Length: 122
Image (cartoon, rainbow, N blue to C red; front, side, top):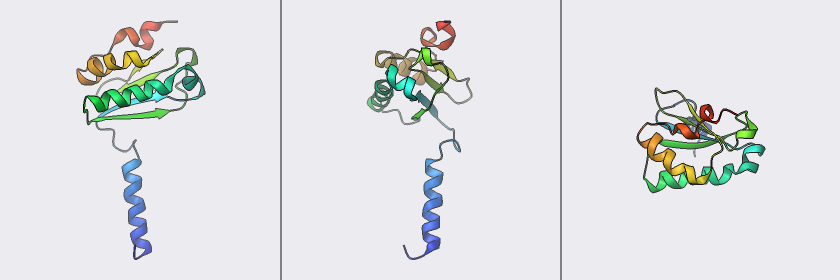
């Protein structure tokens, strides 16, 4: 770096690349990782999504984490966002359910309704 201006340009470029809300192109998988989610097993679920997406070499999916999604008794919870579709919230997630969600919902666009918040109904 030769100047303060160069440093400012690097900072701005880095901010743009990490600011996920700016560009919502592609698919997003958001895992609830608040204390309740972690206690219920959200960390293995997050890792299973990362592994399954890597294994399938899917490039247009971003896996992120968030705080409390709001219904602690249904944790671990995962929200899947596909472009131009409604968000789908999966509840009582386990690593075993991840491959079906990736194949059916993320790859083929068909939500796995039996794992969703609407079907749980408690």
